[in-house]
Length: 135
Image (tube, rainbow, N blue to C red; front, side):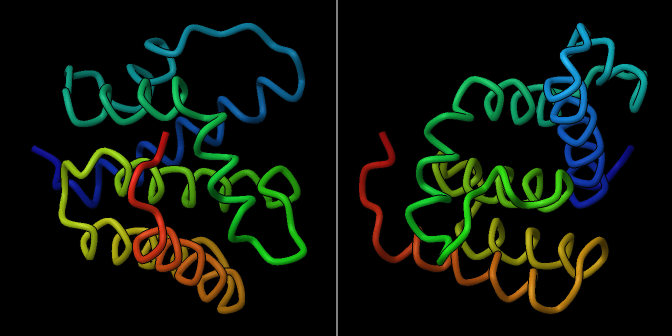
């Protein structure tokens, strides 16, 4: 059984693939991408990935509100996936906000550089402190 931190890494992998396929206009089945990463059904994984896809416009809008001189679509796909997961977890409140932010920071430390980690921390912290209603 995988930990939630390990599942978040899988979420980032699947989102990365989705963003690449969307940009390249390649068709895919989301559930097939998920099964390629984890054969067993996992509600946490499915709920987060499908929820992020469903709410991507809202997530992008929130990110862009707090990204200074940047647009979420200018970020590399991994960073976009990390920030999207962090924002989604803040929106759904399924996990404590501090956990959502810390998990995003840890993923960023693993896959990005220090500047991006600080940027992701700042965006998520601002959303946590300034947004009451996400929709």
